Length: 190
Ligand code: SF4
Ligand code: SF4
Image (cartoon, rainbow, N blue to C red; front, side, top):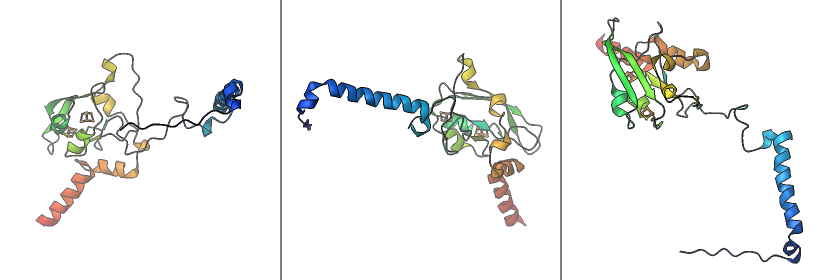
């Protein structure tokens, strides 16, 4: 259905155009000067000097969770790679020396040029080893290779940037979910 928009007829002052041209210039100058003197009232953010607030639930860059000994919590099960709709997770598995864990990743890469930030890898992980809660949305690199996050970059995060719960979740081999599961398992067995 075609919707007709009725325009208000111009009065004689508007038909002179000269006043309307100055009104337009005034609006432009008002926003221009506001950017200098009251930029905090603007609906935009002067990035990169000021960064917008990102909610922790936002699906930002990935990180791999760590065990207390600093090794990745990932058990190289390939569930995240299987769930990834963009096929941008590359994992190579190695045997683990830790008796409780069969495998560990020797290579873990995510190509951020291909990733669609759907979060399915996070959902698929059975041991809560991968998260997207870094609030880091800056993707500026010089080469295509630099957009590929590897085991080293994915595990380089500062625990002080995250909540206490996050630190506590490092205490169990599989994270807090695994710890809870182990406790309920003990209750059932003993
Ligand atoms: S966020 Fe989605 S597309 Fe990106 S690595 Fe995870 S599953 Fe793949
Ligand atoms: S990140 Fe999680 S789902 Fe992916 S391979 Fe490691 S343990 Fe498996």
